[in-house]
Length: 197
Image 1 (cartoon, rainbow, N blue to C red):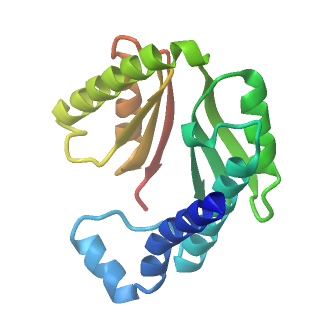
Image 2 (cartoon, rainbow, N blue to C red; image 1 turned 90 degrees about the vertical axis):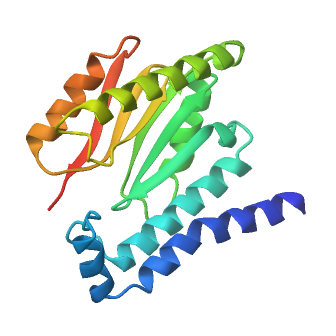
């Protein structure tokens, strides 16, 4: 019973932003653009956002109910039907299980796994190191003349840094990667920055 209530809560929370986005009008989109907010790419309208939210909810629910996976350590995002898994899992078997669960979601076009294997006994120290890396990368990006006004989100999982957001051009995207690679402790960079259209 508690699991069912929790799943329903997850569904409601996941769908609430999509519902408000679906209710927005073209005039709202123009206002957002004038206010400096990124415009959505072509073909990424309210219908796609609703579908992506639904796929994310289905994937989270499937992960929660699969006993092979500790779902609370996995972040699920969906864009354009592509389900992305991020976070830390305790074993290669758990990573494989999470990927299998996500691939089984009806409607998902593909699965992109950025899951990092971190044994349970190392999680606390790795989490602390990741927090430090995230702050250092964000600080470096915020101080850079070309990047300080961009809205780049930074995530570190076992020293693998993911950059998420929208930037004006390819040069800015490359600069963000270069600056991130220069931060001590960064093992690799996953640049998922999209160019504003």
